[in-house]
Amino acid sequence: MSPRLLEALWQATLDTFYMVGVSAVIVWFAGLALALLLITTDRGGIFEAPRINTLFGSVVNGFRATPFIVLLVALIPLTRLITGTTIGVWAAIVPITISATPFFARIAEVSLREVGAGVIEAAQAIGCQRLRIIFSVLLPEALPGIIGGFTITLVAMINASAMAGAIGAGGLGDLAIRYGYQRYNTEVMVAVIVILVALVCLIQFVGDRYAYRLRHR
Image (tube, rainbow, N blue to C red):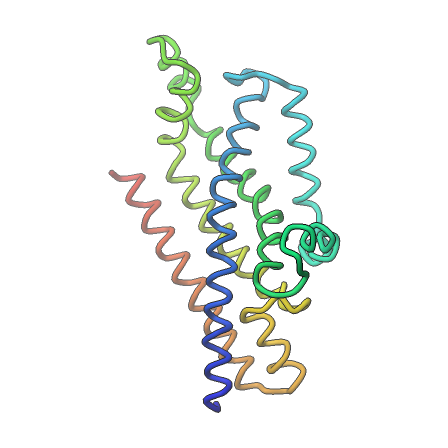
């Protein structure tokens, strides 16, 4: 591989890290907040509000049901409004974040639902305020599952970042399309695949180990 292609491969890898990294920070906080909203406003929840729960649940389901490539195109006007452009790394962050947030919210919601009702009732019995129950009971008890779910979300976001290359978003996906596919450069295509596989394996390993440590602390 020529020095020029090696430099392009390195820059594409950095762009992918940047895309996924910035999106991941937003998704962690937004997805977790959305999951808490869904779990606490459900029937029997500590902030029971069925109508709000139904509204947000429908929005989440709607975004989850939309294929990423369709969402990518549909969000072009919003992406242009927020970032001022529809190509490049920043343009990819918007659809990746919007796609991954409801995905992570549902996974985190499942982990939060696994917290035993008896634990919450015990906290209420000793006079814990509702917000304290959330931060001192719900989140700590569900954290291992949430970390595991976030690991899965990160892997999905890497896949999405590669797919975003189809519209010139930059990163490894864009490099694979421009050099690997359009110029029939098998060497570049193989290098991109190897990097993506290694990145996914590393994230999965770190996420699994951290979740394991939380479960056995």
